Amino acid sequence: MLDYRHFLNLTDENGILQFSKLDSPDPLSGYTLDDNARALIIALNMEEGYDLAYKYASWLFKARRADKSWSNFELDGKFYASFDSEDSVGRALLACSLGINSPFTDIKKMCEKMLKDALPSSIHFRSPRAIAYTLLGLCKIDNEKISAQYSSIRDKLADYLISLYQANHTRKFLWFENYLTYCNGILPQALWAYYGIKEHKKALKIAHDSLSFLNSMLFKKSYLNIIGNRGWYFQGKKPALYDQQPVDAASTAFACFEAYSLSGGSEYLELAILAHRWFRGYNINQLSLYNPKTGGCYDALTPEGVNLNQGAEAVISLLLTDTLMLSFIKQQADMEKTS
Image (cartoon, rainbow, N blue to C red; front, side):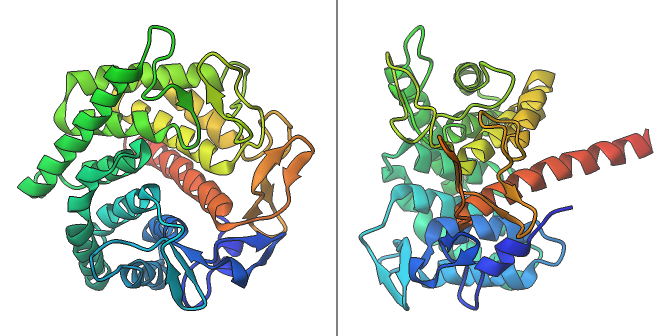
């Protein structure tokens, strides 16, 4: 069963708040594009998620400026540009791409409008992750229904990731940059998804090689060992062990599951399951990040144990990964019934 208690506790009449002090939502932390975009994805997958999906989509809609760009941060009814990032826009474009499949006309129209207005600017992105989020979203639009303009943008974004990999990878460091930081899984995942749409052989090879390299770094032991944000992992140096964040476990699980879905490779499914188990104690600290008393997720694994705060990014990462694995279990059960 999915536990939405803390997710709902963080959500008020405006949207989802960014942070918690322990398990108490912090109104002074404001609202971000990143969190409300990812919250929209969760709501789109809920059986009775219309009201929530409408709320999060409405927040994204009002966060737009007159020039069609997005603000990433709102506090006390005011939007601020100082926290803007390409990555947050990429996540919003992913959410809107998924939102156009909504059965609810008002949500679908909002997402279509936001995608139409903001997508053209994505060809100017220089953040690999922003490009990958946007590319992934476009790959989730029905290939027979996607417009020629969107298809062209999709191809350009894929070409950028491919060229980035070709320019930066080495024989031993099979990656798009000379370092690994956060949400690394989205880069190979996007190319796996692109291969699924276009059967692009070069995209497939890079997706396979880069994900295999990433997994060789993350699963050296029999569990997911996330690259920590206290230094990351630069080529030629040792990866940082802490802090390990839930968003990275989710990114790894989704990348491995995308590869499994398109290749059928059981090794990818096994790694996706291991990444999911990270949340519940199969990690370097042997501690669960899920809080059964609140339904929340602790913000990180630290050298001392866990960061006891339970913000939006953490619980959203947990719920997205739980939703992914639960959907797979249900799919397998349905297949067994019909076989």
